[in-house]
Image 1 (cartoon, rainbow, N blue to C red):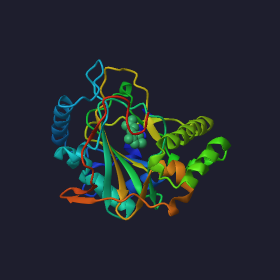
Image 2: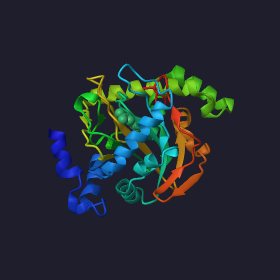
Image 3: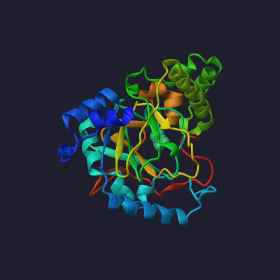
Image 4: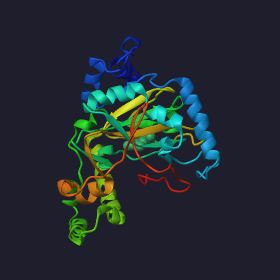
Length: 314
Ligand SMILES: O=C(O)CCC(=O)C(=O)O
Ligand SMILES: [Fe+2]
């Protein structure tokens, strides 16, 4: 397949590049295309160990199993499972992000999937919005070989270079919603106290995102990774989950959202409600935890979804 061949030619490192994982070719590919694959970045035995840890964790929780025995996404599993943390902070990804950020990468959060998300096309910078604006990246780890019919991760090549869709682009063409957002701002409330309104702006943003992509005729390229491969995306690269053509198929994967240590970050509620005045809004406050593999942000415990899809409402 064309994408696979392109990956091999440009986006994948070869064996001689492995010691650093940040060859000049790989760096250039990331800057031009918005993504790279770090092939074989995670040791397969470690992946197997994690898969069995996740299965045990799922057995001990109500993870909303479907008729095929597949559970829903689990948030922040890395704070409970050592192997999950080790996989999230895998050396090749950390080395790569250290170069890209020019700063220490910090793991903000993780999601562990058993099946495809079918998530609409989006860029993560809306959900993990940083200043500087390019201080966020996604790291997606295949915990098994990804089947084309399982609803693979997709990406829109070079979409990190498109005009960046912000809340104001949507509000300007939706005066009713804009009025309500302005009223919210007058109220002195924090954005996280107005989740329903933020969700309405998100819904309008989502419609506009899909409209723009359709107008461009954007092509969704599947990331058909092998177990242990890592896909790194730029914070503004548009991506999502393709339809699950075969429901019994699993799509075991883990996605990790990283930010640069010295960046400031706001959540999606502020992105959607206060996006054009973030300088006036205090960024999220974090407690940073250092461990032998790297740095991550403190969260008390994992979030297990037994209904709905959590996080992005997809
Ligand atoms: O794994 C997928 O299908 C998409 C996940 C995603 O977009 C995310 O978690 O940022
Ligand atoms: Fe995403």
